[in-house]
Amino acid sequence: MLFNFAHSYWILVTHYALLPKEECVDERRLMGGTTCSTSLSLPMLLLTGPSWPQFDLIKPVNPSAESTLAGRFVISNHAIYVDQEEEEDHHRSDTTHLPHEIKTAYTVWDCSIVLAKFLEHQQLLSRPDSVAVRGRTVVELGAGRGIVGMAAARLGARATLTDVEDVCPMLRRVVEINGLGGGVAVGGDVEAVVGLDWTEREMVKRVRDERGPWDYVLAADVVWVESLIEPLVLTMAGES
Image (cartoon, helix red, strand yellow):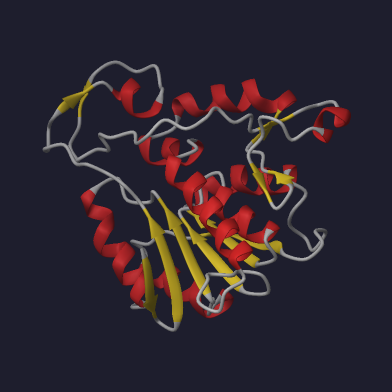
């Protein structure tokens, strides 16, 4: 969906279904975790969406292995990575102790793949009415692994990636793995990774005042509980 709020264009791609409160579900179905069935106090994500081809999103240790893009998720002739080979096992095991709200950020959701490819396709159209991010400022909400924001950067945008504070260290590492950030990339780049909790209105105002405004605001699969809808809409509308 494409919105025009607060003088920015917002692109939101999401799919979700809600379970009734106190519904007992197997958390392994939701996040690929190892915990047993649990009684949930909030509605939870039920649908996992369509099945996509299995992309190799792990950066190889051997630099020569990067020369082939076969099996990779590619934007503008650049592979997008979410981890690197020597760190993969360590960081995956690290997620077991994290709360559900943080675990979701470690997952590559289908809609992030869709939105990243949508941006690439729109840029290739080169039409006056297409969504072209080259030379634009963008912010990604609930970035998680940062696929959408990094894709925008590879397409020539100046991107700010945001998520809750506990996710930002992982997100900064992913940006670095992809050779983005710090002005080292040619063309577009990830200008900053910023902590942002939509439920903290003062934080939203501060980030908007310090980093905004943006030409495009991007979000992919960021709503999985009903309580997040109102804070998201208020953030979209630029209200404090």
